[in-house]
Image (cartoon, rainbow, N blue to C red; front, side):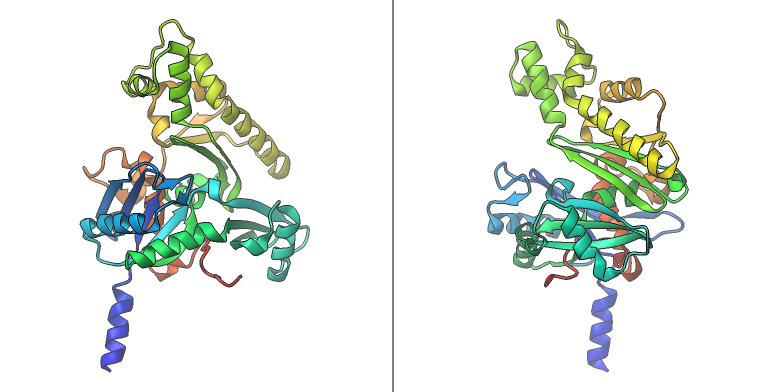
Amino acid sequence: MGILNSISKKFNNKFPLVGVDISDLSIEFFQLQSGNGKKSIKASSRLELPAGLIIEGQIKDKKKVAELLKSGFDKGGFSSKFCLLSIPDKNAFFIVLNSDDDIGVTQIYSMAQESLPIELGQYYYDFIFNSPKEVLFIAAQKDIIRQYLDIFTLAELSLEAIDFESACLVRALLDQQTLAEPVFIVDLGGKSSDIILADKQGIRDQVNFAIGGFVLSEKIAEALGIDFNAAEERKKGGDLVLKGADLNQVIEQVFGQAIEEIKQMAAEYKDKKGVQPRKIILVGGTSLLKEIEKYFSDNLPDYKFADSDLNNKIDFKDKIAMINNLYANVIGLAIRGQNIETLNQGINLIKNLNN
């Protein structure tokens, strides 16, 4: 009986899981708790990483990152050492597999291998069914996944699932009512940006490209003849006015590709589904610049720019300013980590480590 009680207690203490978001420059932790209606923040923590420890998702010093991971976790006061992690979309391969007939599980590997420009034997992968005839397939290199398993082990934390960023953003920012029509999430980060097209069946399309706020700062510096740090301060100062330079032209150089991607993805969706996407949610630190939202709305006049549904799901009160914009990825992980049912939903790239 004592052993059974011990097992039961350990299992009950597992939830809610802690969402962990590791980027090149920071680690964010988030744990939610259930309330009356909305969920609320149980615990959270954030720490900045020294430059060079992680570069483009590659961990250069596992021991040091593990020490910082443990330090940030310990400061958060979390009630569980069981965690969820997401990998950046740029470190994963995505494909939506379609068939005229229902797709069997045994078909998925061969369909993905035929369609992707990689050797799947060197990747961990998982998939979810959008419908009986459509599968969303995700793969990530084994060395990328293994490095995360290593640092969590060194930090004495249990990593229960590895998700991917787009899924976390959709889970955090959208609900089923919003997904009754197709919605774009445009996540404008510092070093890269993601465009996600989702509807009630799931993620329909996704693209990642290496442009973001840092590139914008470089273009501003070039246009004004100033250094990068001065351009960053000018950009963050609020009202981004470039005397002697064409601001729209500078923004166009950086985000013109995103506008064209949205138009192309929307056209392909309409061809397949007969419905024109009309809604966009802008997120990410770079989207906070009012000139950026104006640029997107001016160049996509037929779209409605909407707020996310995150504040309808979670009671933030006065905690963490701008949480719905900057921390959506880690919140999406925390939402998944509420219980065994939500944990088992979605992609888990460490579910089948022997594949």
